[in-house]
Image (tube, rainbow, N blue to C red; front, side, top):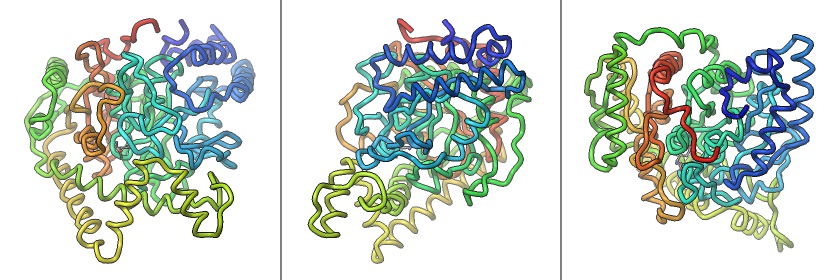
Length: 481
Ligand code: GLN
């Protein structure tokens, strides 16, 4: 039953020596071994046990940090020294990282235990985890449904309690949407809050790492370790890291919540709308004030994002050329053949589609019409939020227009892109966003999205924690867990 405990509870249990980190790690490894969700690409059993032994010795000596000995899983987009780092792609399937991402290094320094690397949509492109080279992940609430993406493996692992928490990355919703579809808590911090060094780049001006946890309290504990300036990442913010657990218990009386009318229009599933409105009532009963707001440029988030992200990915992924590292085709005839076949054979369909769109949009004749235009609209989207945050503290709405959909149910890319309608704006504006479990629709979890102003993670975590002291959605578990 150890797996039912939160990170906060596990940390206490380890300190009191109710159980050892080795026992806890073995417990999770057994659960992973028995699971049929396909949540992991790599399970690092030996490494985990040696990290757990190390953690136990720190714990017995009394020089443990807050999260020493806690087992977690890492999205397979973070470079981990000596361990395969594939980003869900065939092209990186042979890649053993020679170094640790800053985030991995920080978790190691804390003395945490890495159980393995989680499955994901190839190179973080997707909303269902069906784009993974390693096959789709199943949603623990209904194995015929998707877990969301691109951090689908991390979300499924936490929802099925195969891991105390997991890391994720969110370029356009990849922490929040799978968190919503799997019924866990996911936080995408402000752009620049967590170092991107060693995190395989998708769209550099949008990518941000964050914690995927059972609760807001756990997210605060983990963010404390993840956040901070890194001189290896020129876009990481040189800004103090507060103790994110400090204000969790503040009252939210008087908190101003804005509901963007554009987030409740057609396309939103009725049953999802019902859950969201019900959870807003809960906030009102805790003393928050709710008002309708408008984010008039929301409708442009999808077209804007699906120009900016492919442009940046077409540039970032040019380094995967079959020469430096990763997959190389057999018997290339010459250099052109080597590039052509390594990339054609190594990348999957969706990634190729985006590389082509991005390369086209960035080409000399089209740059102004697409990329530059998209950057201008991006600015307008940011301005909408700026105006809104003059009036309200937090913006709330749905994360995803529907609960988890069927595996194989969405076949064309454009319909899949619609799943991101409510999440993309926060990335385009660099704002922190969160998904917290808020209820169910036909036995499938539904997440509430909260978007805050830049650097207001504490406000989001406080509101989410207060909601979780009044509700039990976040501790409900799928059957047979
Ligand atoms: N679903 C979006 C996409 O496919 C977002 C992915 C992400 O946040 N990494 O690009």
